[in-house]
Length: 149
Image (tube, rainbow, N blue to C red; front, side, top):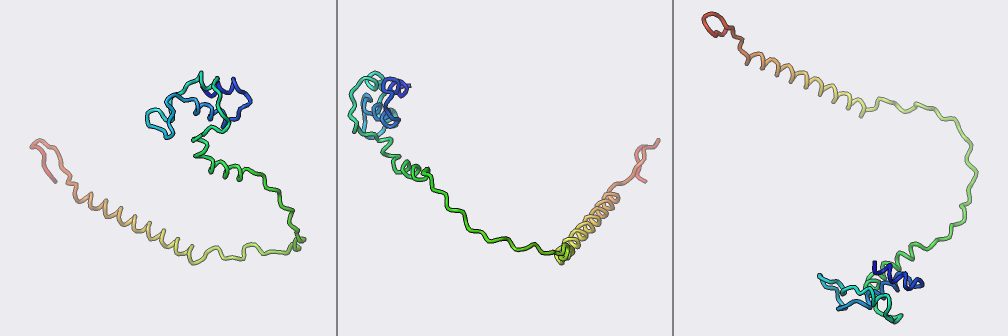
């Protein structure tokens, strides 16, 4: 909000100059930020009305200046290179489609592994069903009570 006030009072300032003005007019200004108050306490009135020299220190922009100059360098437009010289394309020739065998050794190995897995699954299912039948003992409930067959 203070930045908006400063910018409305001084519309010709850049973002860097607005921040410099705010930092220069802080109450209890510190050169190193503290965990409680940062660089100081905002004073909106002084930020909009005080005379701030053009060379006032700005620790925030000074800390990010190396990164901003790199960003500016990366944002510069690079001229487009001249189009590459191209040779005419070679004439189209006939190509036989399907000359590569579709059932290679790896395909046969995959088929064999799949079949072996299915056989193993079937054997395990049969063993499991047979063991289940052996464990279950049928019984009847008659007049004399419960009896096993």
